[in-house]
Structures are given as structure tokens and as C-alpha cells.
Length: 411
Image 1: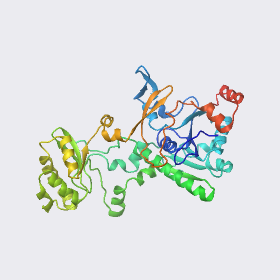
Image 2: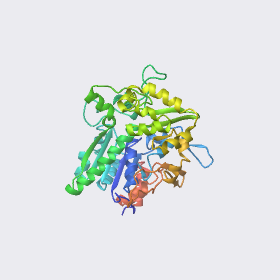
Image 3: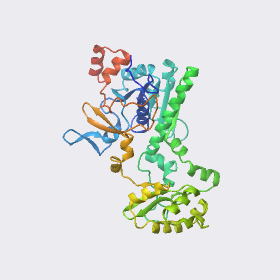
Image 4: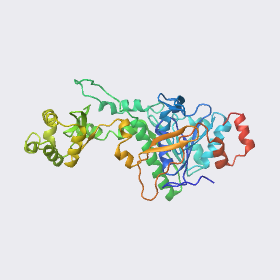
């Protein structure tokens, strides 16, 4: 009955009851991989992030519309159905859709959906194979489980802002958030990993399961070196600005017409860097010959390197360093990416066409499969754009019932 689709998880049906970023991002990735994703939105309002602007989408005459550019980033490859699930009939329709789904994604506050019979316990009675993913700020258990949580709050509470920003005593010192919703992104990725693992388990057991994902846990799991440094070494990494806490020279350096990023992570690369800037002697200087020594003498080395970089601009230095196999590159703006040769060669900007919104550009899914490529089938939908066709398609609802549901404002 479903629409023909391709990709490594074609045939899976996903009911996406999430809003804002983390959950919708997970739903979009599953859609890219070939799943049939139906996004359930609130009747009358739609996903909150549709209204998180500026910037706004432009219409054909270049005027702002009332829909955010943010929404477009995490909602392709989905069809949208609006349902008022506070009505018994609306909740029953969602339960019926869930009985025909493989995966159910939700990000309501812990306990909310149980009031409508849309919790895991209720739905798995009808559909024992259902994989039910809950994404919340703090998880289904623990003293914070009742709190709402957003990306910024998780960055603050789960340690990210303690290692991001300039160190105390330097200009602009203080904790900083990362400029993209990194916690939402990680939680969304973990949700997808969880779904794929649970699908694999279901092949063996026939059973679904509930997956509890929190922004707080996701952020702590991605602290990596900052986590291990404290829990295994008793040392706080703290904020190091553009310096790497454990490698040098590794950071932003001024050149004649701006800045470049130089990344040397081992002694072999440092030998190549020293040669490239005409100071092969640095490699045998005991202050710089090992990574530990370079980190200890970071400031001296940074001064010497900055002086050595005078006389050439960004393009020239990046060319030289790449010839010497030293990792280096420009610090691009998002606008610079539009004409970047690597972006163009790999089709990283995907253009999609929507019948009413016109052309929408989204970032390509980075998963590159040799045999079952990702596909881009649906541009980000309007709220409720597919309500009728999904209810016909999945549930066989006839015209009379559809018009009754519309009249009652259930859909």
C-alpha cells in the first residue's frame, strides 16, 4: 500500500510525533535512508519550529513568509498530518497509525502521552513489534525527568559550555554555547542508531522495545576528552578558546590577509610544518621536538610561527601546507561554502522543489552508500499537507469520514 521507496531501510514505517530539532532530525535521517515517515503535527499550529525566526522563507516575490528557514533544515522526506490528539477520536487515529508503524518517535514531556493512551505500554499491546523512541531533556527517570529541556540548557548543564569559549584572563573570556544545536544533533543521531539497533534485534526476536534518549545524557556522552580528563585524570580541561588542550600548534593563526587553521596532531606532522615555514631546526629544538614539549611551550611556539607566517596570504599558505601534507585550511563562512569546490563536487547542497514553497536548499545527508543511496523524495511539507492522503493510504479512511473529521476539526 505504501509509496514505493528505495534505500537501505525502505519499507520501514515511521510515525514522527516530535517537534523542534532533535526528534525531527532523527525522523529526517530515517526518511533519507528510505523509511516512509509521517510527521504528526498539532492541529491549527503545527511544529513550533515553523515559527522560530527570523530568518523567514521568502515567497516568489522575495517577501518574507510566516514560515522559518529553520524548519526546512530537519523536515525533508516526511509527509505531514495535522491531528488534534486531545480529542478521543484524534488520539484513536494516532493509535491506529501506530499499530501500522514500525517506529514511533516522540518528544513530549515525560508522562504526557500516557494521558492519551499513546505511551509505549498502551501501543505495544496493539503492536508488539513497535520500536518506541522517547527524546526528552533529561530522560524518563531521575530527579530531573519532569523538567523540560532545550539544547542550550543541556549545553550548560552537561558540561559543554565549561570547555567552550576563551579562558579566564583573556579578552572575551567566559562560557560560550556552540553556535549550532549540537546537543539536539547528537541526540537525534543516537535516536537513529537506537532505531537501527532495535530493528536488527527485532529481526531475531520479533519484539520491539522502548528507547529512552535524553539531551542531557547525549551531551555528556559527547564530552569525550573533557569527560575522561576529569573522571580519569582529576583535571578539568576548562575553556581553551581556539587552542587545543593537548596538541600544539593546533589552532587559528594570522596571515597577511586574515586567518587560517593549522592542525598538527603528531611529531611527524610538526617536522613537515617546520620545514614548510623554513624552520626545519624547530624539529630538533628540545622545546618543540615532542608534542608534550610543544604544549608546555605553546606561547613561545605560537609567536615564532606567527612571525614565520608573515609575507603570504591564506590561499598561498594553504597551498604550501597541503603540499607538505600539513592539515590546514581557511576559516570559511557558510556563504563561502556555496562556491567551495569540494561542496560542489560532492553535491552537498541539495535543491528540492515544493509546489507552494518553491525551491528549498538542504544539506545533503553525509551517508554515501555504494549500492543503496539515500534519496530526496519530499521537500519539507506544509502543516497538514498530506493529512487526507496518509489517512487514505495507511488506514483506508473514506471520503465521508475524512469530511466528518475535518468538520469536527480533528484533522
